[in-house]
Amino acid sequence: MNKVVWAATIAAALTLSGPDGSALAQTAPDATPAKQAAPASPAAVATDTDDAKARRAEERKAKRAEKKAKREEARKERAAKREEAKKERAAKREEAKKERSELRTARRKQCGTEWREARAAGTVEKTMTWPKFWSACNTRLKAQAEKPKAN
Image (tube, rainbow, N blue to C red; front, top):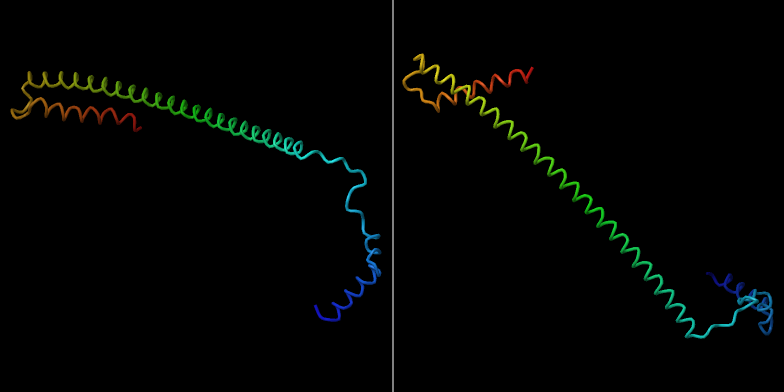
């Protein structure tokens, strides 16, 4: 602030306050309310505050416990869903395994019948053994089973 503004501000303050400073005090609003309750004793105020603090603390604690219970319940639900899905996947795997086993058994029986017929007819080479015949026959039957699925 420059000196002129500063001097004007001080002069205005002195003019408003008057010689004894009472004019400004008379125009200023009263800082305290007209009706004022009697102050409670310090022990009573402290007890009310402590009770309120304790009550709020209990409320916070109850909310935390409720949230924790909800989280725990949600965790248990998710675990149950995972367990159910796990059981369903295991059942599907078992069913597929059983189906593959049944198909393999059917192919083995068919290849065994072909093997016996070919040996009886004498159409099998002298170097051909059952494992080699089974491998070739199994591959051929699997390919035949795949063709209808592809179409």
